[in-house]
Amino acid sequence: MVKYIFEYRDKVRDYECDLQGIVNNANYQHYLEHARHEFLAAHGVSFADLHQQGTDCVVARISMQFKVPLRSSDEWVCKLWVKKETVKWVFMQDVYRLADMKLCVRGQVDTVCLVNGVLGDSEELNEKFLPLING
Image (tube, rainbow, N blue to C red; front, side):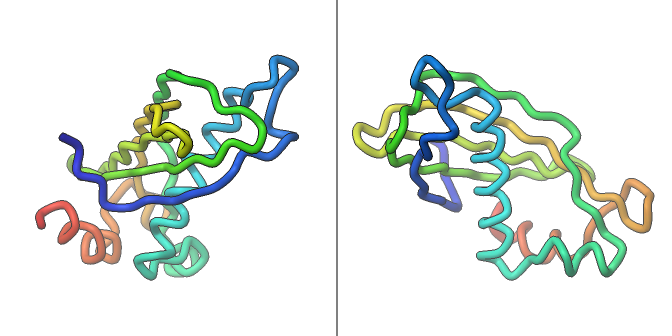
């Protein structure tokens, strides 16, 4: 059983849907990104502050599995957990439709940090997030 450590809720906007009346696949990437940013903010991490300190967190790879489509006005929740693999932070994110809790998208987002332009480890992220992983 997955042990989620964060949830972010939102609602589908009309302009996010395609001619078929379902959320366009590219918008799910926005949902996942916004949920990750909210996760960071909830733990006192600011992208702007990290950048000012010389650390830029970037996406290295994204994989998404589409299960059940969301439609206009559907409310959804993105639940996530994170793991650390060497210098890579891997975000496992699931988007559920709130009305029936059906899984809509399963995403894996691999991120890395560039510290002063060089692939490296962020001490701030390690301090904030390793305790969440290790219990």
